[in-house]
Image 1 (cartoon, helix red, strand yellow):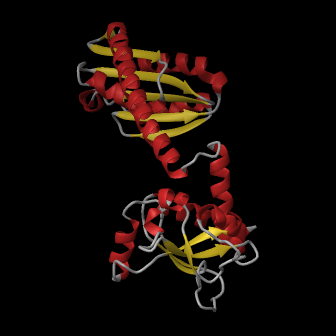
Image 2 (cartoon, rainbow, N blue to C red; image 1 turned 135 degrees about the vertical axis):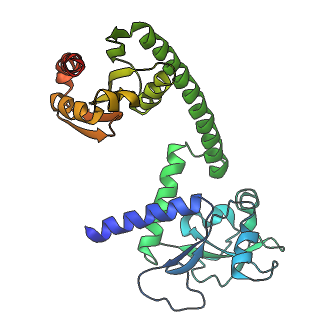
Length: 299
């Protein structure tokens, strides 16, 4: 079990580095012997990257015209290369003609004479390498409904995701602004302090921005905000810094007491603290206790 978990962790790290256009050196399992040894002692890079050849050549300090090797599942070799009567090429010993699919998807591996010295990989030959890389590749292709170009499909999804994130951030910021205006109109002035305990419908990550934004406009602020996200309750307390010293108020002490109502944990600084808990049924008691604590601390 430990070995399996270690391999999963290494596979994830390897995937992340290669997807980030990094060059990765592999040194795993037993040493290899043969005309070529790939899979256990290898330098790896994503061949779909248009500048892959120049990057790897610069690292290896070798001439630009020298060919590259690629690993390919034996069962998919004929999709990219003219295997003809060749049953396999496990040692990168043959220069094999490339098909149009190779020119389109992995042009950096195609030599000047339209060949590539490939290494076909089977599960029997290198189980870890085969299972970790190739099965993952097939899963991704199946999930994306077997696109013509996996690289272009993933690139397009990444660009769409980036645009969606920007749009979500924009909408989220607009919502924070709207909630902020609503809170400011509902503030109570108690003995010169602007006080409120309220619940809001915002993501927890936006609560701190909300508190600090209100504080930039309102002085003498004593604010407690409660929100819910998925299966957790979040409670935040902001106190203007001048009140921390003048009134001896401490948001960390307040959050410490309130966290008990939601089976939560948290902390922070004297002027801003937060907690999170999984007792959803404690929200109403938390709200009541928060209002009572504000009154208690202001006496």
